[in-house]
Length: 144
Image (cartoon, rainbow, N blue to C red; front, side):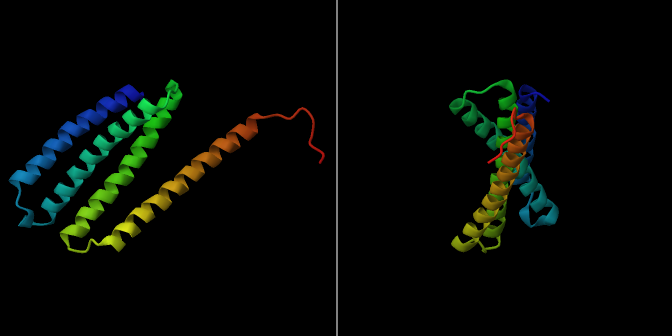
């Protein structure tokens, strides 16, 4: 899927999930059960992920001059980070709804997501280094 179609799909998700979230917010009683809560958080998660992906991709495109291949890589990174940020926001809202959100829980939540992001970035960087090292052919063996 090209980046153009991916962004168009994200705009469609913004419209649909935004309408769903607003309808849940205004027309469904939050005390009506678990379905209402899941609809609220699920539609908000999709809405936030799509908005943050477009914002992240826009900021990356604004500050980096890159080729088409890099644009797809930038879109993937923006999508991944938007998912992580949306998870942080949804979990923080969920903890706040139960009066469990405090500074310690917030730091643990952000720290856990940061560790996962660093792990993924390290794995991606390792794959890139291995691919480059396999492409390099030495003309003479190194005898040192």
